[in-house]
Image (cartoon, rainbow, N blue to C red; front, side):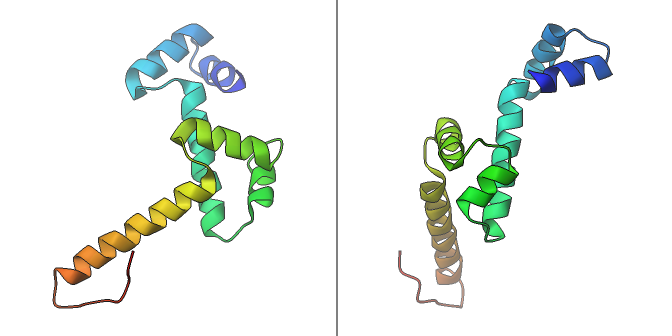
Length: 109
């Protein structure tokens, strides 16, 4: 794991010691942390209207299928399902906020 090797050498620790301390401090292993960061980048590019193939290439996945596999492995949903559900939840939150105030809206989900 290149991330652990580079980071551990920068702080003068063995890879194993670095990985253990990282996990104790942040609650997840360095590799999982790095995968989550990469998915954050995926979502950022998606919100900038990139297509999934371009996103996969930009984020270092072998192909779009690899991106989908990794995404599903981490969040139990394919990327398209995840963003649709996140959008729907956002609309529900807006509806609730607007419905409980003096404003109303016409979103129906």
